[in-house]
Structures are given as structure tokens and as C-alpha cells.
Length: 225
Image 1 (cartoon, rainbow, N blue to C red):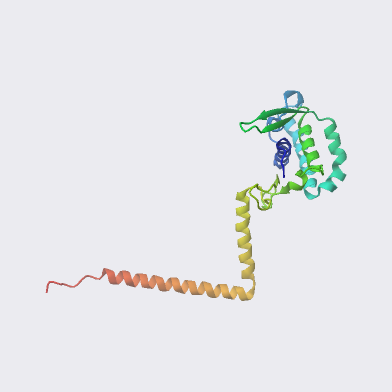
Image 2 (cartoon, one colour; image 1 turned 45 degrees about the horizontal axis):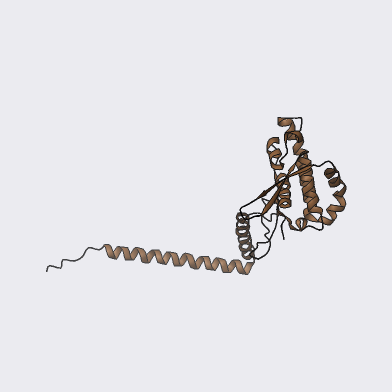
């Protein structure tokens, strides 16, 4: 994917918002989307957090539909997204790094809905690859939304949001494969026989070790005679 960084940042902000367990701080959400004071709610504290939690739930529902099927999500939720975009005002700040790469960072001037509405519109857009890249982490305890983009070095696009979750799932899968293998009667008998052989070998090794230690501790005879 030839990633447009400003769009990628906008989508990742919305995914971060959707992935929250619950909104506990309105200010944290405002900072996430770059909402200036003029676009913030009149309510403050817990009241503002409760309103933004409603927005988070709505955002998560839109993202979940886009992850399952972007085309159907566009047909089902397109009107809602167009309504969000109609009241959205985004402001961009351009920066350039030492290598000459220009990045446009967008801020939601009119509120949180402007930020996630734009992101969901990008997920719906069939001319862009964001909808196809949207995944949920395959690690069952996680299931967070993320953009699955293949590495420039090659290889398949990731199915886990982090390497840690991939390794955790690999361990769980290994345990399940072992459990399934042992559930087969013939395999269970082989496993029990193998366990018995290993226990016997350990006992024999322990006996040999003990006997060797006893011999080595015997006093030497008088060699002066």
C-alpha cells in the first residue's frame, strides 16, 4: 500500500478511539483528535466523558461494520457518515522532516465526530485501501481494530496487532494441538508409554548418580604399607 500518512494517522486515531474500553477523560479524547477549545463540549468532567462514550460506541459500531464488509458498511452506514462529514471542519498542519518528506496532520476543528467521521469515510472509500487493510487482532483476549499493512521487506500482512499477541496465540495454539493429539486414544497410549519410559530413565539416571557418588566417597586404603 502506498500509504498516505495523513489519512493513516486519521484512521488510526479513530481506531484508537474505538478500541478504548470506556471514555474516562474527555480531555484525552480531545487531544487524540486535535479538537481545539472551540470544538469541545460545553459540558465538562464526567458529563462530557459520558457524551463522548456514546460517540465512542457509535464509532466502534461503524468501524466494526467496515471491518466485516466495507461494501455493505458503505451501503448501510453511508448516510450516517455523510451526515458526520457535513458538519465536519478539518484543519491541516504541514511539516517536513530532514529527508524532505511532507506530512499533513489533520485536526478536528468542530469536535470528535468530525475526526472519526472522516476516518470512517476513508474506510468506506473503495478507491482507497484502508477498508481492505482494517482487521481485528486474531488474539482472542484482544480483538482490537488495527490496520494490517504488509512490511516493505515483504511477507504477508499481519493478523495480530502486536508481535507479543502473535507469540501468545502461537503458544495457546501449541497447547491446543497437544491436547487434541492426546485426546486420540492411540496417541494417548503412546504418550503414556513415552512418559513411563522417561520416568524409568530418570530413575535409572538417579540411581547411577547416587551409586557413583557413594563410590567416590569411600575412604582410600592405607597406601604406606
